[in-house]
Image 1 (cartoon, rainbow, N blue to C red):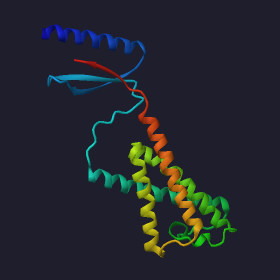
Image 2 (cartoon, rainbow, N blue to C red; image 1 turned 180 degrees about the horizontal axis):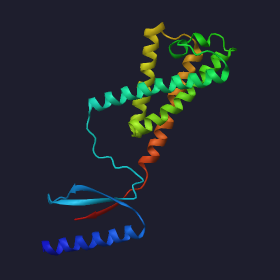
Image 3 (cartoon, rainbow, N blue to C red; image 1 turned 90 degrees about the vertical axis):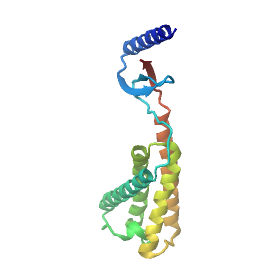
Image 4 (tube, rainbow, N blue to C red; image 1 turned 30 degrees about the vertical axis):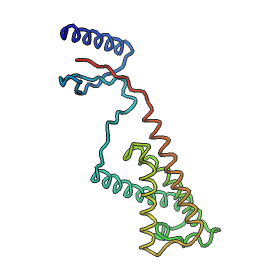
Length: 199
């Protein structure tokens, strides 16, 4: 009986692999375990989606991802300030990073360069969430933590920002980052993955 069951599995697997090859899909073979404890092979065809297994709490991984996200955020913010300040013809200032002083006079080019830079950086943060965090359900945690640390750094640099425009821009940038990050990550998670099982 066991031989007959195994032969049937082999025939089914061969038929599925033939259909997959007929569709022109490439296979990536990974090792898996079946319920009998014997080694079997799982072929993932057309790897347009991503497999996520059962997750376990990994503090080291979370801290590493958060550090990478924070570093990339300030790298993108600096690049955004450099680009917008150059286009607006104003000198870049450290106050743009960590204070709300530039928003005291919204009629200046420096203030508007800072506004545009904050939102440009938030779009970059979406890409960082897509690459570093990957999971849609984690975007809220990482996005809010990212801007939460930014507020904390601003507090230690020059006290809590007081101008309402600063708070408006950063809260809106946080919402934009989280919602857009969740959307793009969810789109990737929902891509179909064709699985061909063989022995």
